[in-house]
Image (cartoon, rainbow over all chains, first blue to last red; front, side):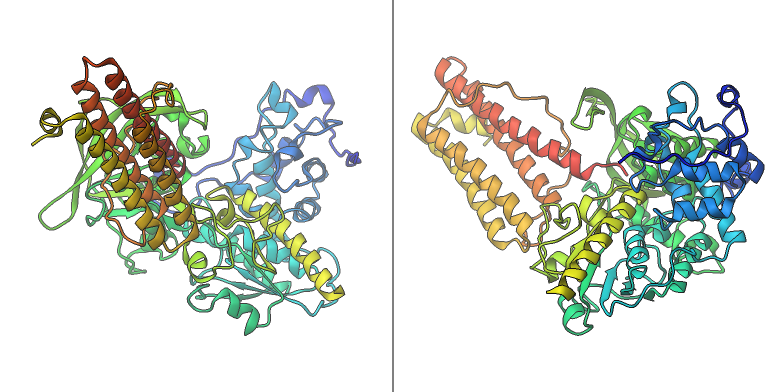
Length: 483
Length: 154
């Protein structure tokens, strides 16, 4: 269907738009921020946001929306920024995304909407992510919090349980409450947000932002229950039989840490990234002695991996006071899956990068504390299926690095509890729930989406899956009433 | 006594018997693991391994030369430095892949030793070299899967 272009409020002549420089995101000074947990990016000013929005050339056939997994109406909200109607711009985003302040911070826009921005073919693309963040923050500060959205719907009389309060669960809850269903979100931990709260550090995503998003959903009528572990506190079957839910959405995430299976991984001071970041982020281990969560302060922390989680862990170790904090990565920087921005920020903060290096053993002292990592140097061979050149060990290249904290950040798997307690739910050989494109699982009335289906992916993809499943749940519930 | 030394004192029947026994041990091991596995996904993975080893056994019985014609891909060495998990009913796919890759590596070495032993017998040398290559190809496939799924480096 052909899209009606939004009304233009851009006062800059078309020819001049491409001469406007991309507005730089104001940041905390690198030296100062390496010693604190405050947010690194400070957000565009209103003046910067308007200037950045004016760089949009209002394409007749915009491709930016194609790059967004939830199809946010990017041209529309950009024009509302040009009009300086920031609250209306925020509402426009909210039509398609329930967590704009989060996505504006953590989405990899450079490989999504900004990659498909037409301006980006010859110049730097319009900073869509920074604009999204600006209007979401503006709305939080100046709006009424909860999305105004449509009128409160008539209650449907049907109950939906959302298991997991990460991005997939929150997105599904947001859509389902607007359909009049009674929605309850169950969370295993003692704070809501899933990976957004235990995985992403304060300096990248302040918890206050997330609490505000959860408060918005509560204001819309979503009920939240924490400290609830599906398969332990209650089984999936019991949610239907005892709690009377008509449908359940599983957005459990991929929170099971993976290890390397090399010697010495059980030494004291060797953490999974999951544990290390949870101790710091969720349990506020960085705020010692105000909070008494133990977390090693390292002389030399090494973090094994090259993704965003590895960058979060190494920058956390640095902020915790490590004299030296290093990334140890088996490929080269070119193959790193982490966002360029995160690599750039880590370097600015003094993180070392030991690329083409792979640990093969961790060495401990007589008390069982890690003191070093034995490593091999790697060289790049032929590309693998992901297109990245495959690292191959260099014979005889063994060497040792001193390290008193090691964090393993090589990926996460899915929680096995559902597979173990609910035989009706089909899982694949990696333990991910098998679901169709609308999130339907092998169990009647149960839908799933996000990392528990796809394996570790991005926040926005999880949100997109949550929204798709919510639409399917809505249809399922309508059919259930009609039958 | 090393395998190379052991081979010296064996006749052809004994050698083939040893090879079939090696493949049968793998079939038994993976069958047991399949039957003990608690989830369907692990059972499926073990069944794939049983099928693979059964095909090897058939090749040995039939002395098939034409089955394997491709050269093995490069050894990725992904699992060479990993610790081998103990067999149990709670193994996950990651542990299964490590056990299987290490086993393929060990069997490839056995066939390579046999190929070297029969360096002067073209048919036998070719046959055992192909069996060694086949095991290395399986090691490569298992390690590529391991790398794809368990070294995402997130």
